Image 1: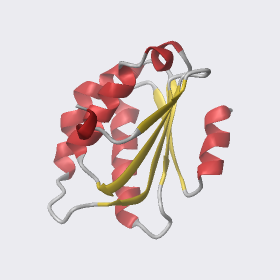
Image 2 (image 1 turned 60 degrees about the vertical axis):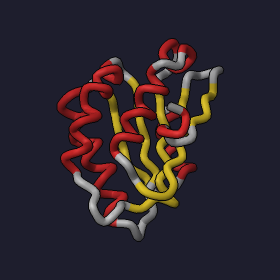
Image 3 (image 1 turned 180 degrees about the vertical axis):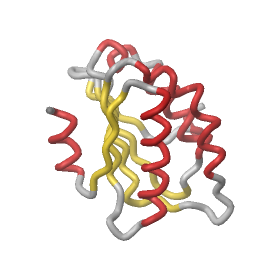
Length: 129
């Protein structure tokens, strides 16, 4: 499964996951990444925050937003309180659209707070508060 997930680093002291999405954005890979995070004990026992960095990512020509709904069952793990921050490029409308799509799904299916930022520093400040 490791090749089917985006790179994840964990801060075990607080229970935060850092995900770097680069290259082609793939909904199934995002779902697998959700699952890998949810299986990490320090994350589950910690603050349950995730920093998603998409600065070097792009949508393939055939990307289907409907594929994102396939990850919804996995995101049910994220129903306990926690925060997720997406860092996107200011110039990438598609990155913002994907992040907003996940944000809207989370608003109706989970108890998580999700925000979108253009800077990693601002995202971390928000996650820390």
